[in-house]
Image 1 (tube, rainbow over the protein chains, first blue to last red):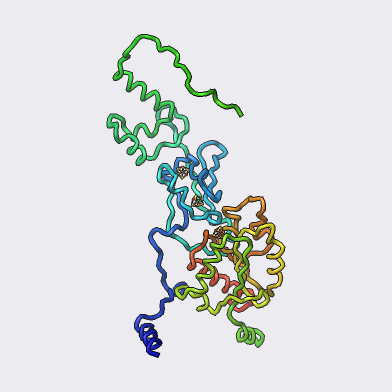
Image 2: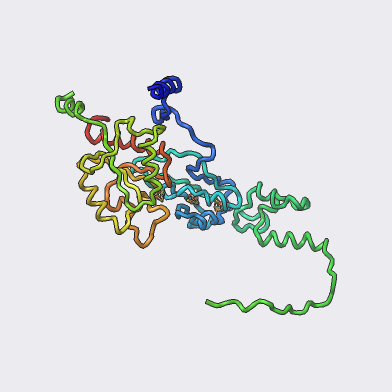
Length: 193
Length: 149
Ligand code: SF4
Ligand code: SF4
Ligand code: SF4
C-alpha cells in the first residue's frame, strides 16, 4: 500500500514520462543520423560515396553534354549508415539530424537530395574540370607556402604538372649526368586474369 | 450532416494496428515494439492498439523486403484484412529493398504486390517517425471513410 502511494505521489509530482510528440515537441539528439546532404560547393564527383554506399542510394550521372554531373541520394534507400560521410574526401557529405521521414506513397520518388554540378574551364588550358574546393586546396598546400592554393586549384592535372615542373626546374639542379641503369624488377610479373 | 455520416462518425473507432514481418532483420520490429510498449512513445495514446488477428486490423505496418519464402503468406494475410485498410511500409526494406535490394531471395519492394499508402523510411526509423507515419495513416484512413477532408 505504501509502495503504491509512493508511486502515485511521484507520478503526481513528476508528471507522465510520455513524450508529447506528435501533439507537442520532442527531443532530437545532436548526432542523430537522418537525411544525408551534399554540399554542392565541396562535392568533386569522385564517386567514393557511391562506392561505399551500403544501400546503393547514391547515383552520380554525367550530364549528356559532358559539362558536369548530377549527384542524387534517394532518401528512401538510404540506411543512415553515414559511410558516405566517413569516406568523402572533401567533407561535402553530411548527415543531418532531420528524421521526419513519414510521407504518403505519392511522394516516394520525390525524396531526393539532388545537385547538378557544372565543370569549370581549367585556368591553364580550358579543359573542363571540377576545381578542387578552396578549403581542401588550402589544407593540401598548407606545407608549401610558395604554391598559391587559389591558383592551383583551378588547374587541370596536366597543367598542374607543368606548373610544378616549371617551378622545380629553377630549384632542382641535376646532380648527375650519367644515365640511370634500368632497375631490376623485384616483384613477380602481374597476374593476368 | 447526413444521418449516414453521423452514424458513421459515431461508430468509427480508433484504428487498430497489425504488424507483418515480411522478412525483416527485426530492427524495424524492435522500433515498432518500442512505439507500442515504451511509455515514452506510447502509440496507444491515439487509440491505436496492436491486434492479434488481421481481421480486426485497420492499419497494417509491414517491415522487411518481402522475401521469396514469405511472399505468399504475407499476401494471404494482407488480403484477410478488411477494407478500407491502410498499408504502411516501415523501414527502407519494404519501400525500396534497402540494403537487401536485388538479393537472390528478395521479391520486394512491396509496392510491386500491394498498394502502399504511407512510407516511413529509415533503417530503422526512430519511434517518433513511426508515430508520425501512424498519424498520417490515420488521417488517410479517415479520408477513405469519408470522415475527414
Ligand atoms: S559527396 Fe564526397 S565522396 Fe561523394 S562524390 Fe562528392 S566529393 Fe566524392
Ligand atoms: S548514409 Fe549510408 S546508405 Fe545513406 S547515402 Fe550514405 S552511405 Fe549510402
Ligand atoms: S529497414 Fe533496416 S532495420 Fe528495418 S528491417 Fe530493413 S534492414 Fe532491418
